[in-house]
Amino acid sequence: MAGQDPLRINSHLELPSNELEFSTARSGGPGGQNVNKVASKVVLRFSIARSRVLGERRKSMLFSRLGARLTGSGEIVIHASTYREQARNLEDARERLAQMLREALKVPKARRKTKPTRGSVKRRINAKRQRGDQKKLRGRDPRED
Image 1 (spheres, rainbow, N blue to C red):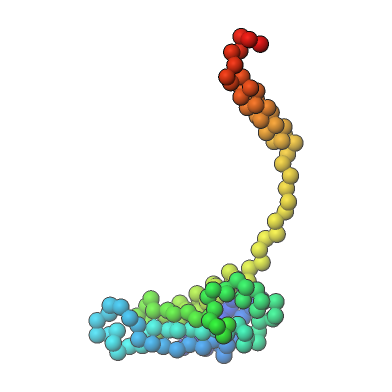
Image 2 (image 1 turned 45 degrees about the horizontal axis):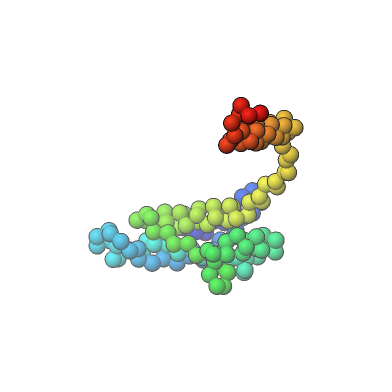
């Protein structure tokens, strides 16, 4: 089955198949008699804490960014029951896990501080001055000046 292959996350990281644990169950929902006898739903588990291929830096990144998705023991659990075939559900669960880990391990782009240009500062100050002059004229008769 496809679950025996290592799972490629990116060009630097590949999870061996022995770190991924999957089980099957009967899917819920419509499907007639087939749904009662075929275990096509796949439950995929990956333990971040017990992983041997993830370094401490990657583990801490995953724990902080995926905290809400983790179980108490530090596992990611993915349920896949979109398809009627177990093999397709397993592949779907593996791809969703890979995508989740890819997103969580992405290093955010560093923000570079920028200054407003001299022209934009000048335009802003002039606009403020014009607005203030306009307000000064309110409530007075301009012929009194």
